Length: 143
Image (cartoon, rainbow, N blue to C red; front, top):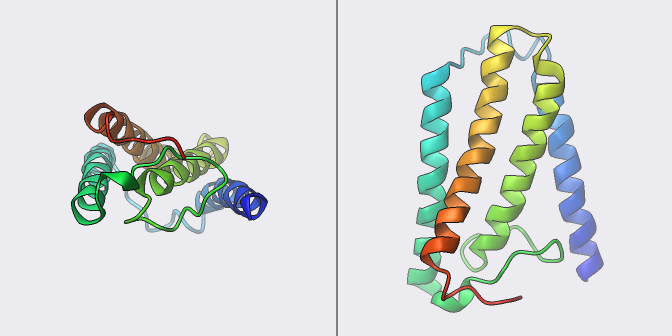
């Protein structure tokens, strides 16, 4: 079963890379209007989302739900295994940001800020996870 989740998680990351690249096609950017405030809001919301997710999980299910993430577990169990879900989400947003960056330079200002929104999401999740690891360092166990 470990290999199934490894393949599924790698597939999610690869599909999000393609999704980020496809999202910056000119047809999809026609009515988009991202800006720096939007990117900042996404960053802040992702940090608070990460902290809230882990706080709720430890409050509801206890601190034994904080297992170190790996590529070999189910990424969909948000409330019972939040670090795993956040790890895979960070990888998928990062892959989408890279995919968007590959196409974003040719699109102009809208493509630049939409690529920035992807990077803000990935960086917000990463900063949130660093805070979680700092706050809950005694409660995190090996998988």
